[in-house]
Structure formats: C-alpha cells, structure tokens
Length: 521
Image 1 (cartoon, rainbow, N blue to C red):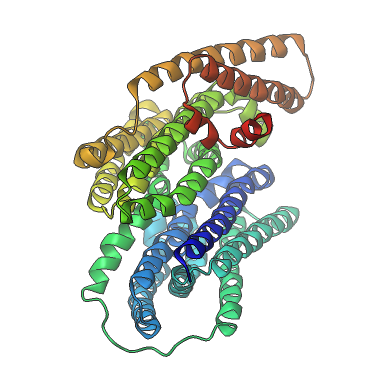
Image 2 (cartoon, rainbow, N blue to C red):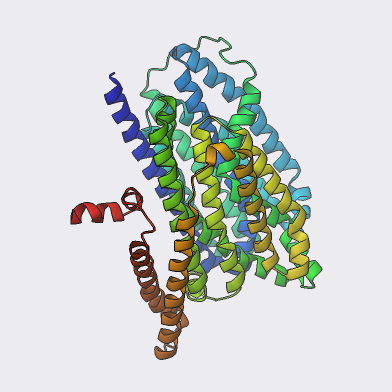
C-alpha cells in the first residue's frame, strides 16, 4: 500500500470513527431529557448517582483502552505478535475488571452507604455486570482500530448507545406506568449497560468471524505491559472520564453536604436531581470539542512523526483557538438563557444560577482535552495524568465543605476550581509543548464580543418575555430560545468578523462555517 493510499485510509477511518463517536455522545446526552421528564427529579437523582460508575467503565471500553491498544498494534509489524499482545492485554484487563465487578457486587451496600443512601445498592449491583464485558470490547475495538479497520468499532459504538438509550426510555415508561419507585426505575435503567454491551460484543464477534485472524506467537513483545496499561492507557482513560470523575465525587458528597447545610434527606435528593441536569447540558456542549479533537489527533500525530513542526503548530493553534472560542460562546449563551433552557428541557426552572455556573466547565474541559491532544500527539502522558489526579484531589477535599457552606452552588464552584487546577498544572508542567496555543489579544476580543452577545440576547429575552404572555411557560421558553439562540449566534459571528477574532484558516475550522465559505467562494 502506498503512503498516499494509506493516508486516505486513515482519514476515511478517522472520519467514520469521529461520526460514530459524535452520534454516540449525542445520544448519550439527549436521552436524559425525556428520561428526566418521565421519572422526575428524585428518579433522575437515583440514576445520576450511579451513572459515573457506568460512565467510567464505558469510557475505558470505548475510548481510552482501545486507543492505547491500537497504538500498540500499529507499532508491531508481525500479525502474530499483534495477537500475542491482544491476548495478554485481554488477560490483564480481565483480572482488573473482575476485581471491579466483585468489588461492586459485594461492596454495593457499603458504597451506597458512603453515598448517604443505602437503597442505591441494587442499582450499583445492576451496573457492575458491564465490567465483565469491558475487556473484550476494549481489546477487539483496539485491535481493529490498529489494523485501520474502523467499521467494527464505529458500528459497535452506535449499536451500543441505540440499544442502551432505547432500553432506558422504554423501561422507564413501563416502570412509571406501573408505579415503580425511583430505585426500581434506576435498577432497570442500569441493566441497560450490560444488555447494550452484549449487543456491541455481538457486532464485534461478527466482524471477527469475517476476519482471518493470525495465530498468536505467544511471545512477550512488550515488557512491563501492565505498567504501560496503567500509565499510558490510564492517562487516556482519565482524560476521557475527567468530568465523570468529578461527578463521582458529587455522588459521594453532595447529599451529605446538603444535609449538613440543614436540608432534609428528601429535599437533598430533589435538589441533587435538579443539579444533575447540568451534566446533561455540559455533555451536549462537549460534543463538538470531542469530535474536533478526535478528528485532528491523527493528523497531529502524523505531523509530529514526520517532524513537520510548522504544520503541527498550525493545526494545534487552530484547534485550540476555535474550540476555546466556541466553548466560551456556548457557556455564555447557556448562562444568559438558562432560565428558558432549563424550563424548556426539564419543565421547571430551578437552580438556574447553579446550573449556569456549572456549564462554564465546558470551557475548562475544552482546554484540557485540546491540551491533552497536543501532548498525546507528542507522546507525553505524565503532565496530563498528574494534573487530572491533582484536580480530582481538590474536588474531593473542597466539595463537601463548599456544599455545606454555600449550598448546592458550592458543588458547581468546586467543579470549576478542580478543572482550573488541572489546566494550570498542565500548562505549567508542559509549558514548552503548549506554548503559543492561546492568544491574549484574541481572548480580549472574544470577551468584548461575548459581553455584547450576552447583553443583546438578555435584552431580547426580557423584551420577548414581557411582551409575549403565554399561559404555558414551557411554550414561552421555547419561543424565547428559538429567537435567542440564532440571535446570539449571529451577534457572535458578526462580532468575530468585525474584530477579526479568527484568521482565515481558523474560520475554515469552525463547523458549518467552512462549508458556507466554500459556497460563497
């Protein structure tokens, strides 16, 4: 295969994998809106208390380990040695996964008690079964990706999410109709994880049956493979699961912190369920960034491997500046329209300020993901792992104290603090590799544009709300959002054009704008 045709194959595979990841992430975020509407705040609280456990396990099987394994497979030339590594990783990861499974099964009551709600134990046991499927999902996805065959991974991702989302919504509708309690609904919803995992594994099994696999050489191709899995693979998993780790801390400390704040248990459950809406909005806001970094990473790695530093710097700067600008625009838009968005999606407009503050984590997470993309392309993992673990530690230390002192908004503040620590440490530890990614003048121009945008959208929302009196508050919120979102986008793009926030190269990197520019050209 010529280098040109191989490059085309890599680009085609990357596009397919990016599209599949976009669909999977979008489905994973969107289904929670109808789910919350069906089960209410307490039902949503039960589900979200355990969701981080599922999310972390899913991230390992879907993103972190497959990417690490694919890089190992690419580095090995002999197909028989590739199989030897796959089977050895499968054994090591199976041991780790079985350990997690047994810990969740037999420690479910203790974990639930640590979450201040022992009735969560059956929900924890339900989600634990997916860990038994993780080793096989991760290794075979990684193998196919390393062989530049992205179809099995892409198809299994989409099938898994479609099955899971369908099962959750159908089972929730059935449970609500039969007056099941929130804990029974949560247990049913979490059983969707192993069921969807089996369906994804069937997709991979069909692909394996159609592939003539070489025999294993049984050679030990890599020494200290376990340490590489934990360090390199663990770093990739930590990056993918950074928000889930912070949500896991919330699961253990928010309810108890609210009790210390002086609230009853039932009130704390209800508030935690409302607070959990913010995670849905952040996940939706991160879809573009995740798709962007996934798509750009192979080109960055290729430029670094060929020592094309000019190309590498252009790609890295363009991706960072565009992603940062878009994440700032999304966070600012969510902040100013939060009362309407909250009511439109979740039927009530509670905790608007808390959710709006939490949504600024989109900006910090975007910086972390993009910085990691640059470091990963250079083969640097240490700064990312150290920064995330330190930020995670900050969240653990301050979360309950801030919630007990400030109320639920303390959890949002703690999340932003921990993410800011991660960004600061990454930028400090890898200052040379990350130098020049952001531009101070561009940030000043962006702040000006965003202030104008927020002012314009805020005034429009107030005028429309005063002028348009509709008995149905949800319908009124819909009308304001339908006007406010395009108005905000228009002000943002026009302001960026007038102040020359983006270079021509960066304009072409903005989603949808590139197509518009090509049509105009």
